[in-house]
Length: 127
Image 1 (cartoon, rainbow, N blue to C red):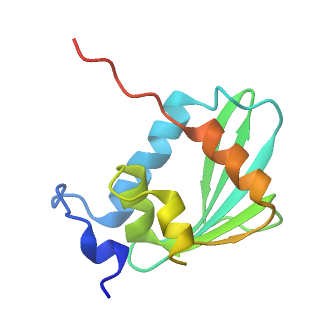
Image 2 (image 1 turned 90 degrees about the vertical axis):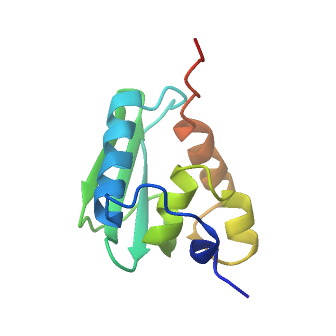
């Protein structure tokens, strides 16, 4: 059975995975965390090329990413860097990835669902 990463077409061939992850982090900084009512932190442990440990802190003041972070967080998410990029691009559904065990979550399910509600970036309106 192919992995989720193998099912995803890579349309941005000129960007490597690390550069795509950096773009994702920059987008969070730009959009903030409009749904945040408290400060929470999440560790994304991304395996494979371009991966690493990324801490996302969401608060009413915004979203902050830290690369090569460590320490305690409210939730830990383990997945491949390729799947992280594919989820951010909307090419795979996070619920499917969790159900198929491509994503491991350490922490409370409610915390994970709250994170997803806070980080949803609205689609740009067509003109």
